[in-house]
Length: 249
Length: 293
Image 1 (cartoon, each protein chain N blue to C red):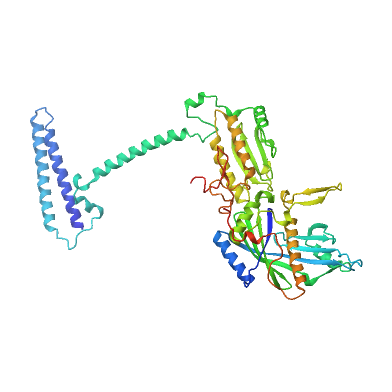
Image 2 (image 1 turned 90 degrees about the vertical axis):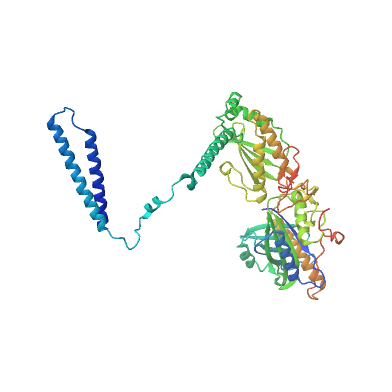
């Protein structure tokens, strides 16, 4: 178990996703990485029925699977106000969700997944995922894991250097948005700053990052209003001004 | 072939008869000077001489009866006997001298190597050969447990490092060092000498029954290699306490294993690994490839 960072790759105009994946794989292989199988992360969302009448967003349950943890089912309950409850269960959890159709119904059309090749480079695991929703290509998600370290703050600079090395784009010096310092409520009801990048990393953190990115892709589709799947990444923490500075001075 | 064989036998018989005859002549009479014995001696000689004559004739007859063989006889290895045997032409002597010199050299070198190996400072626990060293207070391997407890408690630990000491092997201690959330190391002591170091990742199990397994991560396997070479570097049989203290200080510098770039190339990752080597004096981080150039 190590630290995993999810990085969306912005699709340049006029390039197909398969072409970019191919290019990135070639770069990784020439860097010295070895091809090590395939991976798949999928996400299915269930929403509560009936919908609340006061216009507030309904509760949703997101069920995710990660091929890195094949025996587990990850579920995140979202009460619609930003509060999330995470749960890791055995695979039979899927069957349970099938039994509660009268309170939670599956939104089949939002089933989204990221799949692709998996590479190993030293203690790094790099996954080049192409995101598809209902068989439509949505974008590219790069997952990079450093297995030997458990705290992002320690190894972020290493991960950033490797990312910049093979992506050829600049990656901001700040921690990814998921790990940014946030205000949380303690059990005593006090507000407190919490630096997530100093926490010990858990597999759930990977899954939550995937959910965050998948939600972005879904919102993007919703904004386009069903005008088809246009290319282009979701809003990410990558600033265009650093593009081109692939290597640190 | 039979003819040749009988001829050779006849020649042999002739030679032995001639020899016997001359032996008889040389022995002479028994010296008593009697007429009888003199006559007997002459008679014996004539008899033997007659036998020689008849055998001589027989040999001549046999030789005349021999035919020139149609093909050369195959004599096997004995054919070589007829070849040149002069020492100058065989050139055996210079080779012999050469090999003698080499044997001499090998003997000299093995003697030197034996002496050097016996003085090897990397054999740390027991040192039998050096008389000089035995006179030094070299007893670091059988110190009493109290001394080690005291020594380990005296090491001024940084707040991020914790030590756990237990004794699975009788009086010899094992210290499990956890350096922040970065890594764990098991230091196996023999007395106050460090015998073995195992380095593992923070999320890997490191218990007393699992001291020898290697880490599953490449980076910690590399750090363990370096930790072993540092262990030999810091080894000092005369000041064992200082050796342990310097070693632990060196080990603690791995707190920033992932955080510091290499001092030479300024990069974090080379060949998929962070700078795993820590300089023994300055504790500065280097990649394995960068430290020697």
